[in-house]
Structure formats: C-alpha cells, structure tokens
Image (cartoon, rainbow, N blue to C red; front, side):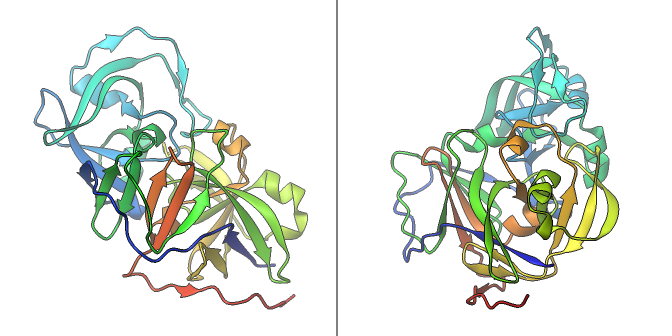
Length: 315
C-alpha cells in the first residue's frame, strides 16, 4: 500500500518579508545535498567545512581530529550526550574553546564538545570540521535559501512574514524542529504523524518502526538495506518507493524514497513518528522561526511542483 505524507495545518500568504536580515552566512551544497559552511577557526587561515544539521542538539559540535590539528586546548567539563548523532558513541567529556568565523562574522564563540566525524567525512568525501546544530538557527529567524545558497538571520522581534509560504506549527515541548503532520493512504484516510525536519538526513522521508507497529496497515515490503547515519554509523532499515507525497500543499515527485529503519534512542525520535530530510527540504526555501514556534515553507521557483489535487479513493 502506498501512502502520502500531508503536512497539516498550513496557511498561505501573498507578499514578502517586511524586514531585512541582520547578517548573512554563505553556504555550498555538498554530496547528497548537505549544506556545508566554509569557515575558519580564530588564529588560523585554514578553511574548514562545517555541516548544518538541524538534528543536532545545541549550537554546534566540533570534530575531535580538527580540535587536535588546530591545537585547541582541552577544557574540563562534565560528560555530555549529544542528541541527534546516532545512539552509538555520542557521549563526550572532551570540550574545546573555539571561535568559528566566516570572514569577519563570528558564527560561534565558546566551549564546544568534540566527537569523531571521520566516518562522516569519508561518507561525504571531504573533511568535516564540525556540525552546526539546532541551537545555531534558534536564536534568530533563519531563512535557508538553496537558490541563493545563503542563510539569512532576521531579528526575531522585527521579523514579520507575509510571503507565499505555508506555516507549520512546531511542537513546543522541545527545542528541535518537530511539526505535526498526517499520513494519507490511497483510500484517503489520514492518521496523525509527528514529523522532524532534519537537514542532517539524506533520506527523503524516514518512518520509524514504532509508527508501523501502531499502524500495521501502513506496512511496506521492501529491500532490507543497511543505511548510514549522520556520523557514518550503520542504520538498519528498508527502502520502499513513496509514489505520492504531499508537503505544504504541493506534490513532491515520486522519485523520492521512503526509508523505514530501526528506532534509535535519541530524544527527538521519542517525540516523533519519522522525519523529512534534505531529499525533500531542498525543494523549499525555509524560514526556521524557533522563537515563534513555526517553520515556513516556500516552494522554490526553480523546482517543478504541482498543487495537491483532491484525494480520490484508489484502494
């Protein structure tokens, strides 16, 4: 049985933002569509690659190899479990004082935990110096523009949106970007689906096994396939084609896939039924408005997407 994913509720507008960004961060699109930000560490002219991952708790995490190579002194600090980096080996008590900059702009300054991102670096085929996490895009309203390859940071008090996008309310109980949604089957029945917006996932859509156990009629047969997590760790699951996907009032082409995998034990996944990754998010210009507990999705002008048609029972 094929299913459709429908984000609800949504609200449409017809103008633009009424404020200008306070500052802008440039990025490039790397392998699999990941967002890479080129930056330096204070005191070094070496350009290093930081990956944007909205699934990582906190503002950032530094690669342990980068910390050693840059000669950053170790700081004593309590052990920390970093959510969103897989269940394996994501606790650390190795902290370093860092100052991450892009040109004259300081992206982060302070203490950061370190983890080994060597497996991730091999996966994306370039050295990853660290992750910029959910905290990095939570203090401001942040516009992620794939077309312009920029992150625009707006003052949360001055920001006012009147654009053509669709608003997704965020779950308030967490600082992660989790929205309420529905899954719609071919017989037009819908069931609630809590969705995590994850720039650190190269899967189009992920549905957790716990959701399938609760809704066995949504079960899909597919190819058992070990996947790769954001740190290069093995993730067991299945792949099946998602032939009909509705997101923010638009139909996504059927080439995207549905990945069913084993539940991990991260906090964000205890609150969700699944996630949407960059395979889908890259089709939109996105405003992350954590202060306003919402995300705004605008379909990109250079992507072909059609408005959702009324559902017809095909069961």
